[in-house]
Amino acid sequence: MQTLTQRLANPTHFMALSARLLPWLAAAAGILIAIGLYLALFVAPPDYQQGQTAKIMYVHVPSAWLAMFGYTVVAASSFGLLVFRHPLADVSAKAAAPIGAVFTGLCLLTGMLWGKPMWGAFWVWDPRLTSVLILFLLYLGLIALRSSIEDESLAGKLTAVLALVGIAIIPVIKFSVDWNSLHQPASITRLGSPAIHTSLLWPLLVMTLGMLLLFTSLHLKAMRNEILRRRVKALRIVRADAGAIMAQQSAG
Amino acid sequence: MTPFRELLSRELAIAWKDGSSIGVALGFYLIVITMLPLGLGPDLNLLARIAPGLLWVALLLSALLSLGRLFESDLEDGSLEVFATGPLPLEAVAAVKSLAHWLTTGLPLALLAPALGLLLNLPPEAYTVLVATMLIGTPAISFVGGIGAALTLRTRRGGLLLALLMLPLFVPTLIFGISAISAALTNSEAYGPSLLILAAISLASVALAPVATGAALRLQLQ
Image (spheres, rainbow over the protein chains, first blue to last red):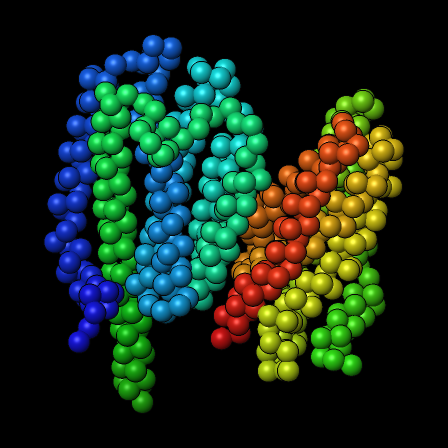
């Protein structure tokens, strides 16, 4: 009797299940992001100090959350690979790293566009910004390490070690750069009621859910592509071997 | 002699007889510190203000130079496989290699730093704290750097990759090292907390990093 996780971790089951889920997830992501953008741009009131510029928040904040979520996915998958040695965990870690890097880049980019009118500079060496930049560099390190090792199985395991070292050190980096910050403190995930008005909160929540579904759809799609790529590679090796044997036989 | 001390004396003997890696690291440190005032202009007040940061960043770069080759020659001549089958676990081998790297690179660089501080017009009251932060902080660089050296052992362009992987992880060491010196410059008693956190980072690295380095070495040898 297999447990649920064991059945899901079987690549054949995973391919069948993800093929059925993916269109629904992608459609829900598209619809929610469309609704969220409509609410954010046309329904939510502009900020009394920042005007329309504050609407960058509806992309900036979900990107920041997904940047951290992406690293959590990479680290959890890496843990799964090193401890349970399942190849699907490696596929998941490999697929999540570039997506997480893109959301981190989006967070930095929207933050810079927001910072110019509000703080008067695209970039300030503020703790929040610095630690997100370092997270971005960690993502780049993961991608670079994986692509520079030819043996795919070894590359996966070594990258997993780096991802776990990274998650151990991220809190230290966060803490080390966290002095007096120019960036505002957390206003939604704090204890008690959120510090922003519900007319601003609703579009943000819709956008966050939509972008989370977008992340999940992209991740599933990338995992499917990676599994197919590995199957094609395995088939090519089999065919090349068969071709070599045929050539030998005809020569002999 | 225990295997631990035997391996350490072997590493130190190799570093001493070869000699070039210590020389290159010290020479690189000297060159970087010489080039910076040429680029920034000879304003002594400016140099004194940014000296702690310059000394620390240049030290990190110099230490990175020799980190890439930490396990390389042992992999090439097969010593690493002998270590793997020897009496010491690979974690302990990693710890000895990192310790030897610190003794032959971190320690000489930290001792050279005050001489280079003179070139940058570092105020006299900062020298004790400068050497203290570097002596306390450099073990973290050698031990965390060991992880990177083990991960990039079989990669193309390992040195560049090592810098990309490791520099983000050196950020806490750098920040608390510099903040201790800056605190000592403004208020002579306030450097204590930063120095203690720096010590905590170093001790944690010494205790935990060899586990990751050992795991990476084991994967490399499979």
